[in-house]
Amino acid sequence: MTTKTLALVTGGVGGIGSAICAELVQRGYQVLAGYHPSEEARAREKQKEWQAAGLDIGIVVGDVSSFAACVEMAKTIKEKFGTVQVLVNCAGITRDKTLKKMDEADWAAVLHTNLDSVFNVTKQFIDGMTEAGFGRIVNISSVNGKKGQFGQANYSAAKAGMHGFTMAVAQETARKGVTVNCVSPGYTNTAMMKAIPADVLKGIVDQVPMQRLAEPEEIAYVVGFLADRRAGYITGANISANGGLFISF
Image 1 (tube, rainbow, N blue to C red):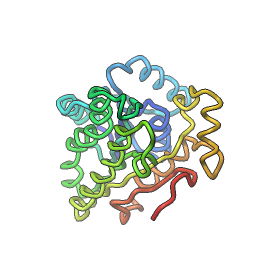
Image 2: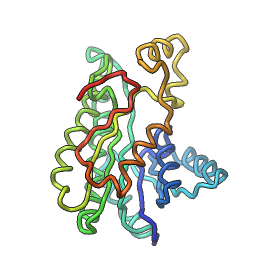
Image 3: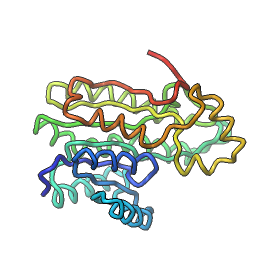
């Protein structure tokens, strides 16, 4: 069992997720990076990279779109590591198509992975947090959950749903020392973005007032701030980190 505050980051071997893991471990947390069973090789390789960089980050497998799988994942974590006190729901996929071309499988895959997962995972740890009188939950949403995006009815709906979940659960846990917040990144410099053709990427960047993509570490810093014990009076918030792409209050 760990004596440090235990943090779980779902989607922890992805571009933003891995940066969050690094941020949290550097802040002194014991960190577990969650990954999908299909990402086994990637997760092992990522762990080697972390170790080479002097970062002690564990990995834990679980299909976050499945409630049953999350029950098993939580059981494994409890037995091997202890009680999760910081949870970052970062797992997500895209299946971009206009609604005219989108089929039920495209819709369901994104809603199951991006939104159902937030319930599936959070449900496993919320009681432990409230009973301990401390917890930090940070849900990684998206600018497109606020403004919508052409060809992303499924993704935008899921990310907007995360906002509603965040605000509701924040009210339920406020008296128990548990905060629940959202971070909504804009377009971020990950492998997925780098794979976009140069002319298309330029068109995306041209829309951003800062004229650049976010770096994963910039998003991770916001998560680290919200996870800090000193951020205990911030709950139900949605913090935008989108370079000015969408501004609201």
